[in-house]
Amino acid sequence: MFTGLIQEIGSLLRWQGDSVVIRAPRMAPDLVLGESVAVNGICLTVTRCLSDGFQADVSPSTRQVSTAGGWAAGRRLHLERALAVGDRLGGHLVSGHIDVVGHLVSREVLGAAWNVVFEQSGAIDPYLVVKGSIAIDGVSLTVNTVEASGRFSVTVVPHTGQETCLLDLAPGTPVNLEGDLLAKYVERQLAFRTPAAARGLTLETLARHGFMET
Image (cartoon, rainbow, N blue to C red; front, side):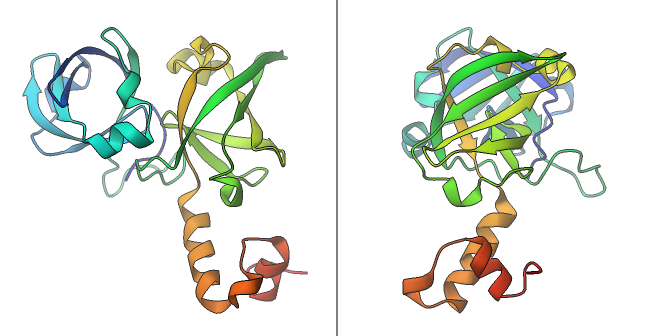
């Protein structure tokens, strides 16, 4: 489990078969074999500890459902170690399991920050809620607007812009998206409590089952 707060920007040194070798000098001294690290939002297991980084396997299914298959040597990557019991939960609960690959649509200056628009196929539409949370390439962000077309926007504040690679993205660049974990559990519970014809995570169903006031 992760929080979506990036601890280091590492870089891909090389692919070694089905494994990635990642440079992460700041994180490397504390890593242990078998621990989980979120790499651009993907939960990977450390299979080898190196003096300045680590190695991790990437399964074929992970490459199919994420951007990992397109990573080339030199690619800068968001890194976060797994949440420890007692740590501050500064972002939101992130599992490291990618729901869908979206892409950057546009970015514009918004005062000292940036308004950034992304688009996805609709796979995470039920989990996109204004003022809710989303993980984009592993970064915990707050959803500002949601459109029926599958587009949504977030604000990237200066600190986040400096500590991540989000402002380096060009329009059309693919990104890993993970919808809010709590929203998925709510949807699953409603699926068992609601007739099939009326299923779907809507304000009406939330109110009907007591999750919100009418």
